[in-house]
Length: 472
Image 1 (cartoon, helix red, strand yellow):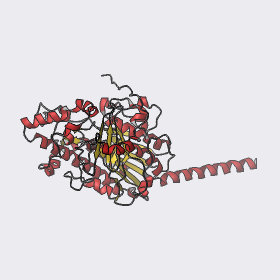
Image 2: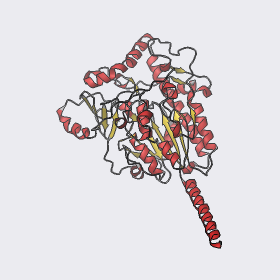
Image 3: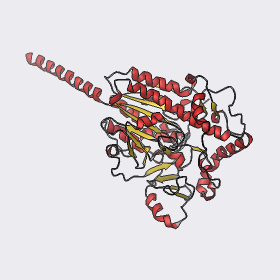
Image 4: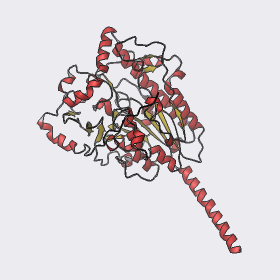
């Protein structure tokens, strides 16, 4: 009997010790603060010191870690970009190509990176636009979170601010609005993240995702964010830029051409409308940067400042008239080039920059490795932790982008090579032609470049999955 009592006591002590060790391990894990920004392109001071749009808080974040100067989305549309990044699987692996593709039905058993953190003892919270927000929030994944505050519905002024029936709808409006900054859409998201940081305990690690909606249209921002940009220069354009586009580009572009043509008509009828449109986009970026700064301030004022990995990325780029195009939905540089920052205590050095081309397939495996979670060999990308330690280290992969089935772009440090579903091509030399005005694809002098880059195009492509339809 005494032997049984001793064994029972020993077992209890062992259990208590194991629980204490587990609690200590959890408490020692780094927190993660993850920002994703919508429609944020590369015409910003973070990526170009000559750019007119100022992003001081993004620069402040980059000064704490590593900025990837050649980072690219996996697809220039919200839903496929976000679904791919959060699951670590490319559109060509899943069939999620479009904004209405039912990504969760395509991957019912695929854990998002947030789920992987939950499974490994993290508390996972978030707010704002994390998954695609259309169709009444039907794309949101509740199983990814312990707690989530959905993005507040967009508010609108009583009348269209640009007074132009020639351009779009209320969702493509722009101007100085609202008067009260607290009525702006991302303030609630930032508030939730600030409150979460302030109320966090050190007994369980936290993954907090902050989805900033602006500068997504409508381009509304309070007046004070417009003032610095009232004389903003217009983006570089070449009027005849469409002349050397191949058939595949024209077919892809056809349904989107109204954005630019409508803006031209609007500017003819209301001179200055185009510049006001650009000003409003810049104001929205500045506003978004300010909300990010508020969350960073809360983290800096908390006990977790030096125990938190911070990541920031944008779901895709955005054209403001470059290549005579407005919006995303194409495979050019402006549609796909994004800001991407990782600040990881003990790994990154302050102010590091990496010029290797990467796409967002790297995020899922990188977060797992940074937080010492079990790796996932099924991911389509590779961890960039080696680059975080040595930004000039070996990196063999270019960035790969896909928009709709069969259309792909590959980007290395110098060239962008696009091949469309019909086999037609574009090739741009960014050393000589950063604006992508001259298509070299039909010049045989560059066949060796196309041959080298074409090896990275996907060999197999999943069929497109059905669109999600929500009952009204």
